[in-house]
Image (cartoon, rainbow, N blue to C red; front, side, top):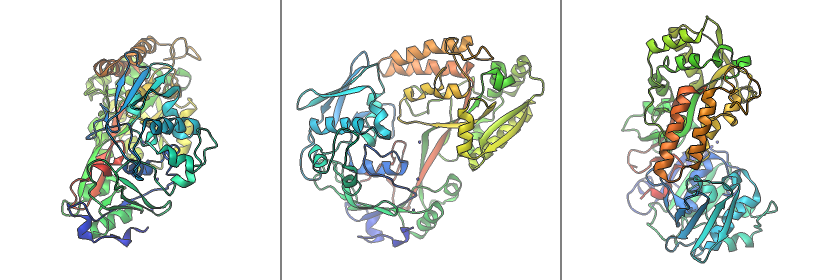
Length: 520
């Protein structure tokens, strides 16, 4: 950024075996899921990711939850200086479950199939030409500079599937592809696991891939049951499940060390405040000094506490663990004296601010109430307007509401996914923020010098090459956003998983929720 057979316990192995340190036994996992497809080229559901990660290798991967640098899995990579061509080269021998070796042809076919089907994940490779160079390498050539490609390739949607198996079961490189039915029940990958059985509404069982060329996985089987969050907590305490994936942060905070090990970390979701930069709708909220007054009137630590374990203050819109993230921000720092100074400068005269939030989200409700209290201390009157999430999204997207709370979850772990916060782009349009050239009207913030300045920084961020240059360019851009945009980053939301006290290697993974391939 999704089920009630967990009580069946440790099938195919005793409770002790599942929690042993040897390469045997079964691991039982409780998750809440609504599986639609197990076809990597079509899947886009969060709960499917950890399953697909276990059975499909990717060209590249992230190691130790470090999203700032892709590492080789099946391939090594090089990117051209103009950020248009990524060259992938096979990194040793890898084998599918039927014993056939992974080839360049398999990788090319897998990527072209994602493009041809045109499903939800197809945008990852928009404008990219996939071509075989020789038996060891292939190229991904983008029409425009695209330094994000290496950060996209670790996605499970770009997992490598066996071409010959796909073709035997109806695969094509267009919308007529018919391999989904087969892939919903059978895996065609080179990961350490393969499908044993798949029941979309209740349970997925994985078994070892004996042909896997790598460190053997710890467990013979992984059994993933569809269980509601409250039952997950009961099962974990009772010892009838090993890992609970969907316990909320409040319940997790109450678990003792004798009951569970908890692994937490920041997610890829940034929660932020927005203010309409068009004076027609934003009114006083379209005033830069007014928004900057609010930046300094927020008790950031308290907002982070609402989101629980693993959460962090968002110093910029890019999550803290991504390339180009800010490590601190003096602009987004609590300073009530400075806030009141800026509020006076803005000309605020007691106007009521309409603040939109999701009424069916407990955390959003708490944030809205805290915001109202912070604004009262500043001397600003806030009226909370709660709407169900779907309605709230429509209201925000209309571009006609004054202010509110929202969250942006990364599609892939690269700062380029956050260009939506810059003038004339998706999220900016919802907040009425345009450059002079892009402005629909001349009202308020539209066409402001700050927006035009930020556009120059956007160009620099897009053209930067290499990790160091890209990091600096994105930090410069976010610093400018914190000085003069209608967005105030609040928190990078945390996420967690809870496991039996005897399991010490179940770690929260930002990209995959949990990576079973690292449990040994």
